[in-house]
Length: 483
Image: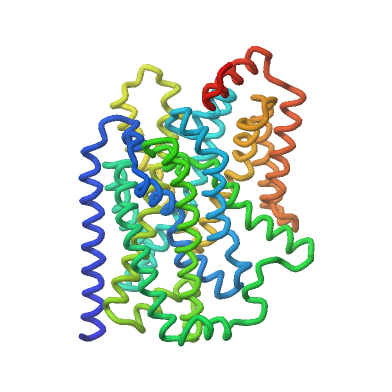
């Protein structure tokens, strides 16, 4: 088989795979009768599907393309954010947040801010949360466009448009049902493809020991040097996704879509462990590729794996790799498009139209999916670095939403004023440090300001005694504690 024939066979397999995903979305749409079906799959997901959909939250382009590029250039210290920070996030969600969220029976993360604080806090948190997803989705669109560019030599902007259209179609129709069912199928492709490729590359190099022997000194060093700036950036790498992605709607939706509270908690733990294990495979593959084909390092290192597989492997290996990569991108993109769309409908629009029917709410959520896709596609055309696009989304929620969430759940004196000061203060300080080019990490500055805003605002402007009592009663009900 010639190279041209092989490439067109590969394109055919990818086209078939996209059609299968669209059919799954169409089938899932038959289960969507209400806005709850659309947002949280009617809370009917089993443990295997719930675990896979949480695993698929981040296993996307930044894992297979972005993180491998960082790993090849910087070693372990270059990938603390992902996969280590991402796995930490899921485990923390399971340990400290999922149980409480599940008992509240809410549609969105921002509903909690309304319940715990006020309508104003809910609105502000929603306004800040929605744009935080644009960079995440944009990173996936760029990755899909890179694949199409490599295979078909089409312009990047055309690939971005094609990817956005495919994901919008099945997310628009099937909502969380489509996201979770396609995630389950795509996870099978991801795991099979990554294992197959890892075994193949390791065998070609001559074993894992040979790969390790040919890495530079300190490549696998897990801790930073004893310099203040290095230590601060190391902390940032852990907390950006590890803490910053906890107050995110896609995590909330995936966790609370489970059938039971126990399944919700267990799926978070399983998803976190799965992510760390499976996401380590592309890193190992990239090291093997670095040894086998060092000439590929001269170009864009994000293209290392795609170019290596496309130019130096069999058709079966190409199908397995690009099938896994496509699965990773689609699973991440669909959930990231759905999450802000649900927030727009539930927390920004619905409160202004209290008499809105559920059918109207469902229509608004679906239309919001299209809006999120358009905004993300614009951002994707403006910034092409996958790893940075993905990291930006978690930073925004870290500096504005994490502290109000944590304090609201675990500090009885957290007040409405403290929550508002935490959100606005964190964002303001982050913006100042980010755009002034200060040496101190802007995300840590914003997180510190958010903490101080919550602390001082709650102490200086506490909620009324009646409101504190009502909050305590609600908290006891959520935890199953009798008054």
